[in-house]
Every structure is written in structure tokens, then in C-alpha cells.
Image (cartoon, rainbow, N blue to C red):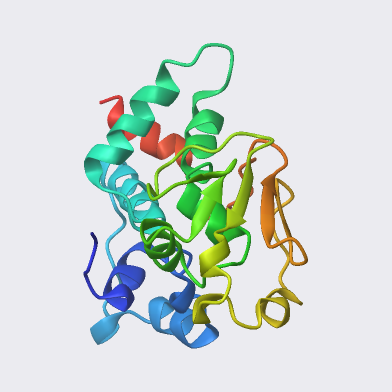
Length: 199
């Protein structure tokens, strides 16, 4: 569990890492360094390390988990390693719950999954890293629908635009994985992470 202050991490790794750091005020504070000193340009290794940390904190995963995802992506034949790594990270159940708009953050989604609020293909799942595939159906558990967490869900999702690879039906209180995730995150440099682990 990562518990370092989010704003401190956000200043070091960039505004895209946490939702609460994606405000104009925060972006302005990042651009003006503390004490007015111009930060040194990082080395190639330093830049790769920053990108690795950015992905780790964005998805809230441990060093070992990220290393395992990289190994898994590297062993897949026929597909680009970078695309496969992104796909593996995005296909986590906690991330899908977050992408459907059911949680304000990935950390919140992880907690909701761990507490057993979701059913995948009619089986209750409490593992945040559970890997989803196209066609999988994620439902809010019957006993959880009345929880405060899911109050006024229709209002919360009214203006929310989910990525094209997931959908959520308010009436049925269920989501579906429509396709494999595609990397549209400009702030994540997946190739730099792969280069870091290939050293």
C-alpha cells in the first residue's frame, strides 16, 4: 500500500499521476520550483526511473507487481510489448471499476473490490489485480447496491465519459469490457519503463 503524501509525489512525478493533482493550481505550483531554483535535467536512467515511478503510483502497484507485468508482456509473441504492458495494467479489475466511473480514484476502486462489492461473470471477486478480458461482465453485487457508495450513481455518471473499451449500464447496474484497452495516456511513457527493466 502506497501512503506517501500525494502532492509531494505529484510534484516529483507530474500532475497526471493522481486525480487530486490534476488542477490548474497544482500545475502552476509544479511549474514554479521551490526556492526558485531550476531543476537539473535528469539523466537517461533518471528519466526512465521517473517514468517507472509514475506508472507505479498511477496504478497503485508495488515494484514486484510492475516487474511481473513487464516480464509477462515481454513473453507475449506477436504483439507490441508496450501495448501489452499497458493492456495488462488497464485490464485490472480495480482499474476497470475506476474507468467505469464507479470510484473517484484507483485507490478507492481497489478498496471497493477488496470489500467484495463486485461480481465478475456471476462470481464474487475480491482481488483488485484480477485480469479482465473482452466480454467480461462486471456487476455491482446485489447486497452492495443499497450501500452509500453507490447512492445517486445516475447523477454521478451523468456527465462522465468512459474510455471506449468499457461501458456501464445504470439500469442494470453492470459494466462490460468491450475491447482491449488502447494507450491514449500522453503522460505515460511505457517504452521508457521497458527500457528501465531491460538494463
